[in-house]
Image 1 (cartoon, helix red, strand yellow):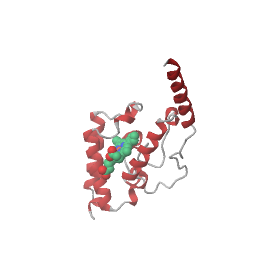
Image 2 (cartoon, protein in one colour; image 1 turned 120 degrees about the horizontal axis):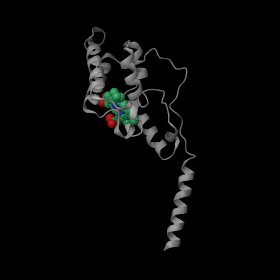
Image 3 (tube, helix red, strand yellow; image 1 turned 180 degrees about the horizontal axis):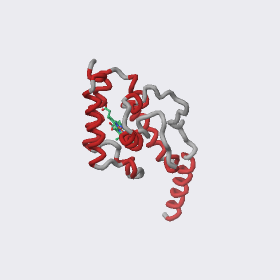
Image 4 (cartoon, protein in one colour; image 1 turned 30 degrees about the vertical axis):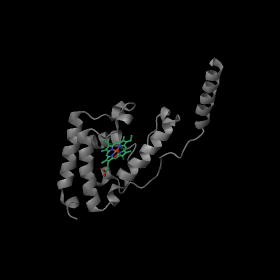
Length: 157
Ligand code: HEC
């Protein structure tokens, strides 16, 4: 019995080593075009820009700032799947290319997700403490989102 457990242990260890070699492409695009970037097109104030970049851009943009443990499997697979799903739903780098209607609905979704605390994902903030938004910061972002939502440029369809 003991011997069998040892074998299982060794097998698991080898699997763990083997999966380290699976490293999908990184979500990094240096030199990309930022003309449609949300924070740039809306002329976001620097405090708001910093908060959104820190808390949201790793999963909702074309450039993720990876930490060393993001490269360790199986974490890497979770990270990449979150980025893929997150970008499909909302890519801040491409926000300006969305239709007005889509921009409008995404702005509402952003406020909702921040207010409810669903975003940034808690599985992410466990290791990225600096991405946690406190109540004041949440309110700051929501107030700013409401102000751009009310501005003419976006409210006309
Ligand atoms: C760890 C990655 C990650 C981070 C960080 C993150 N998101 Fe997300 N986000 C996702 C994933 C994955 C989805 C899609 C699945 C879901 O809704 O849970 C998503 C979905 C969304 C949606 C839903 C889109 C829709 O139209 O319903 C919004 C809005 C959103 N995120 C906003 C934000 C905002 C704002 C932040 C920062 C405060 C943020 N997210 C941070 C991964 C992330």
